[in-house]
Amino acid sequence: MQQLYATWRMDYISAPKPEGEGCIFCAFPAERRDEERFILHRGEACYVIMNLYPYNPGHMMVLPFRHTSDYQSLTEQEVREMHRFTAHAVKVLGKLMHPDGFNLGMNLGKPAGAGVAGHLHRHIVPRWTGDCNFMPVLSETRVVSEAIEDTYRRLRTVWNEEMMV
Image (cartoon, rainbow, N blue to C red; front, side, top):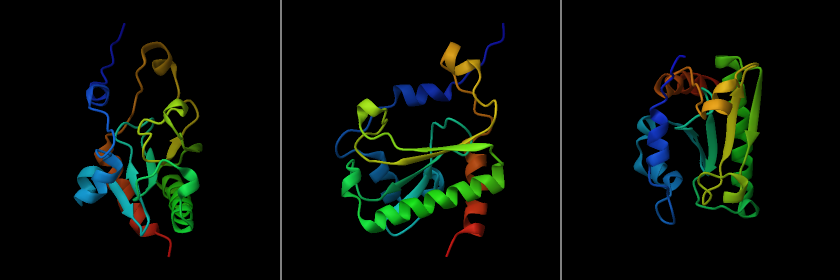
């Protein structure tokens, strides 16, 4: 039997979960350490960040800067920018990583599966035929084939080259 170690998952499992004022999705852009925090792009109302614990390489999220969990409270500008950045993410991921498909979605509220329920965010997950195997089912381990630092550098270059007007 072979063993696969995904030691980085323990960082996520044991990390303190944000509550109230300690929202990571508010804190990260405020720090202005975009490369360290894997922020790919900043708009006026929203930003794009790589998921630190991705389901697949290239997994990113689009979020409003404003702290809200209420989808109905999004402003027209936030809705437009979230949609525009999502479309651009699909374009960039398609060009760079050639996935067979995408999962786009939001988990609104803890019961719906939101890991950070207080700050809504849209996931963009590239998918490849056969990328889901027995590992998550049998051993609760996901295999991610590329380091997030490498994916970030590649995506940031293409994102900026391809950025829509």
